[in-house]
Image (spheres, rainbow, N blue to C red):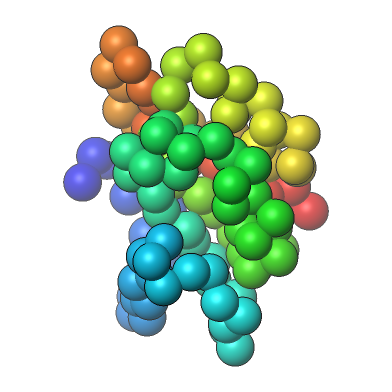
Length: 105
């Protein structure tokens, strides 16, 4: 795990992990996740609009996202418009950027 990622996120000693796949849908959870990760899927192959309302509803008020954003897709602008701030680009390729986002309070 890159050092800048560890500094940005790993601040809790024990964090429960819940894995959801699109086939299971984004259900109403009884917890508010602190972190949602989507690598090479949402915001890369699927537009931000597909899950953005669910992410806004489910993510904790000070939660973070780590997503692969396809360059030129406009998905980064959609996240900014929904109240997210990009904290760091933790990996880049010619087609995408892996970005840590924080929900603005």
